[in-house]
Amino acid sequence: MTTKKKNNFYAGRLAPSPTGLLHLGHAATFWVAYRRALEHDGMLLLRNEDLDPQRSKFEFVEAMVEDLAWLGIAWKPPMVSQSERGALYRVAFEQLLETGFVYPCNCSRKDLARMMHAPHEDVDDEPVYDGRCRPVGDALARSLVPGMNYRFRVPDGEAVRFVDGNVGPQAFTGGVDFGDFLVWRKDGFPSYQLACVVDDAAMGITEVVRGADLLKSTARQILLQRALGLPGVSYFHTPLMVDEHGIRLAKRHDALAIRTLRQRGLSREDVLAMLG
Image (cartoon, rainbow, N blue to C red):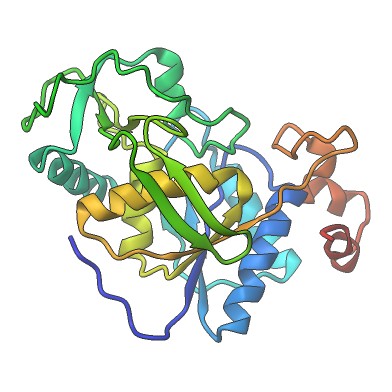
């Protein structure tokens, strides 16, 4: 499942979830992604992360495309929608299963809800797993167990290191900073972590620009890249925007949604000036 990348070619991506309107926090990160693509004379792609069938809505897809255009953030079509890429995720999952990197697990409903979207989507980061379903020793199931969810077995004590283009050297230790994480649901949906890794490789992404709340997810995704034999990518994590109370912006902040600011009469220049 190896994907080759052209030397010195830059490809970035925007990856919003259509579960609400884009807000200033999204705009800040997407503007950085757009500027970095321009600086590298590269291209910017758009991925519609609509894996959550309960929360994803078509009107939010239309709104995000319109708001990006209004902000002046150009991307190269066509837009990729994760809901149409199930076969790719299944191939990757089966590879992980056959090579012994994952194991079946009885997850709670809260776990299942969490794995459907990125950790920054209004929820806390996935907690360190307590190992309740982890196989003893090195024994791993290499065939599908019907009706089960699956976790990636993280090497305990192994530090995953990378140098972020914005915040510098990073290290997260398996079993301490993060634990075995969910990669597949029993109803056939991949986790955010797996879908993100598969799509970044398939789309030829060379740099991922996203919020600093996903630094720990980068460690998980690096492990998945290694397990799947996929090329690594560069990372650039941006500071999070917060409201007047110091709480990071989320889709519940309707007053700071790009659509709301537009309706209040703010110009594109006004909104860009608010990004800092």
